[in-house]
Image (cartoon, rainbow, N blue to C red):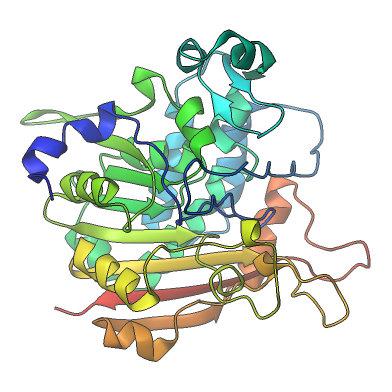
Length: 380
């Protein structure tokens, strides 16, 4: 493995090639998970979220919604993150080029190296500020609930580590909004995802790197940091090396929202392979890597929002099974103390969805938003 001191500066500057296996999955859509072979097969485009009422969009919408969500949360940790919405930078529309056959996205500068026929087939698409922060997976403000439940369950982790210098990794980050909010508080934030479209979207030099917090102390301005790592963690050694370098002495918190679902990892019925999450390593090895990436006492938080579980006579939707994919005893064997296991958070999740203007019932009038979370703490 390369010396982390040599790799670390590359974590922000280099865009790694997406290898296979790990995942980017949300409650609305199957994960965008290429198979292990190279080149990767087409990525399945995520369906759009239901249209919301016309009104403010982008940062303006996030500022308004942050005030609504804050009323539903309890801990200062999550409130502090939501307060950063008003400082999010404005984003000018940017172009990506889409391959209509594969669904792959390319930055215009990447397409310059293609042969003329391949380049001519690409279709331009303009990305606005709203899509930049939320992509197709919904408001990044929902992530504040992940921090809310974690800080309520194990407050000493958040008391011991204030925002400046707190190190957080999000596995399957999906969109940049929540990462930026935490970095603006002074955290060192690493987002890991295999979806190569994110690599094409978040290509500007200002999308990551040192982030100003707007706060000064006796030593000068406080600064956060944001790094995006694209590829399979932990199965790809190069990706693992970059993440390890960014972690420095270890992460205080590792989160996975709508990525590590039981239906994705352990489907109970046959399912399209493209809708599953491939960890790339056995579950016990994956948990060992998560354990090793945390500081002693650090938290591993799995938070899943899912639609109504597929019935026996319905088409099986792996993303509807939001249970933790790792049994309690497997987490404990990996060196974790299980703080909460598949704790039901559906009531609060529905309230947040309603505040954001998203539906909470299906066409039959049944509840269609369910949330479960598991919190595991690395034993010292």
